[in-house]
Image 1 (cartoon, each protein chain N blue to C red):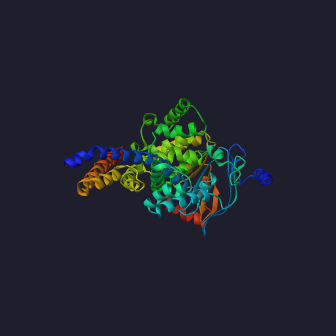
Image 2: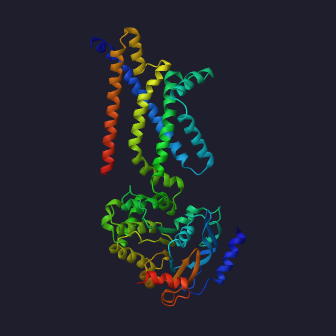
Image 3: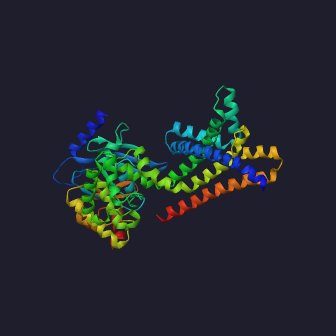
Length: 268
Length: 213
């Protein structure tokens, strides 16, 4: 274990491709030779990548390209078949690692929101801080009120998820993830289940997070969001990273035919 | 009619005993069933296997036999539970196996994303179960649970075979004393009907209340 961690640190020194300079700090997420198979289906094929602190990375690609699986491997909701993933230097692919500890520092936002329907918006946000961190209720609620205000929903604190619109639910879900004071936020197609008129309100919250310096990995089809706030775009297809680079490069001069084909379909 | 009026006090006493053993065994059975149901969705093979074995054995054998086993079978091994003890344990163990399946189905009906969301926040499996999955599952399984309780109430008549003076047994005693099975068993049936009717009305009301929430 020690040797493998050391190996990763050495690799970090050499860094990844130069596409992502944001005050040059070390890699927060580091993925080495990652493979994921579902039975015979080879979903991720030898992924090597890294995300620096404060970096905002958008992962795009056709459905079935493995982008959601990659994201879910980062917090090990999906177990890697082989390869290594380090979060802040901690090898999450190592069975000895306490995943609960690591996950506290990685917020995740899901396509289907996955709010707890039997709890109010406020309770959704306070649950993990009280249960996991053992915060007193009043303190957790203070944090929750602040976060709900941040996502523009302080008036909905006592509403149940079923009483909220999709966009509002997703903003509560973001607040819920932020309540654990994560170092990294993962977004798995956060706007794909939303009605068009609600997409902007969620993207706005995400943009603010990005500007505040949150390290973010976002799987999305929102190219506008990618263009506006992200540092790097990763294009995936059939389980591999086809190409990556700054958004203006990828969107205006994609090098690979597969990228061109995909972009021609999603950008109108 | 005079006969029924004469028999009624002791029949009602029997009904009280029926309610007693039913409610105690249902209480123990629900606890047992909840634990077994949780074990049934566990990925640990030993835990899961133990739960499955228990459920299979109980559901695959007649309740009457289970009552014989806990009273005469264990009695033969010098484990004397007494009539009440044997009856309650037999019914509780039986109820546990059936509620375990209800609890398992209830847990599995909760979308996978709920567990994932809880785990992604750093909650442990058991925290996620207790705070996120079970509260939602229980709400959904109240109606089938009450059905199971109704079944146990009726099946408790089987413990009359170990001469425990619950409702059915009391009826039998009156029949042998008076040779009037039609009236006596008719009255016994009516008392069971009243009890199950009240239970099912209660279930219906609960169901409606949960729906409107």
